[in-house]
Length: 170
Image (tube, rainbow, N blue to C red; front, side, top):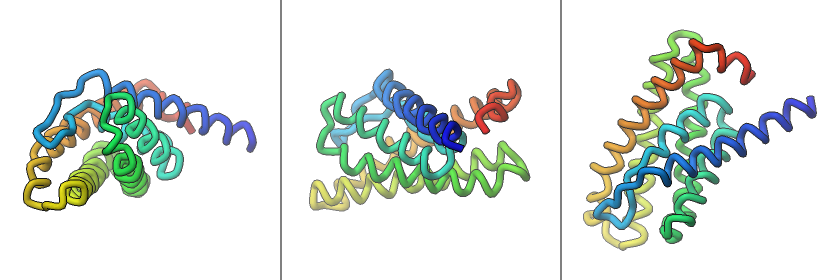
């Protein structure tokens, strides 16, 4: 029992690092003083592999660290919450749909998670700027980032299943 908990904590820490690196490797500045990145793929994989608690923690912490390291500290508190909630919600839906159809589970939970991300960053930007209309400029970039994250995480999940990696994670 204790070994399983330690294993999940270690994997969550590794996934947090992966989320951070995936976010930082390619980041394209957006007009909203944010950036488009590949981190959502790793955020969704964290959710799929680790579930809502550990996956949410890995996603939130890894994304927040990337914001801090890239000089977007003003986004870090919002990112911690938004990415954590995004992964937790995606993990819950993925867990319910996975037995029926893994691809459908990845896509549906990814869409749900990315909608949380888009709405969360819209609300956070509106709060920072005090103007919802200006914050709407972040929606297209976040939607593109989310779509790429869904496609990439689904492809990687299917590869992980084919190689038996997902079974070893249990």
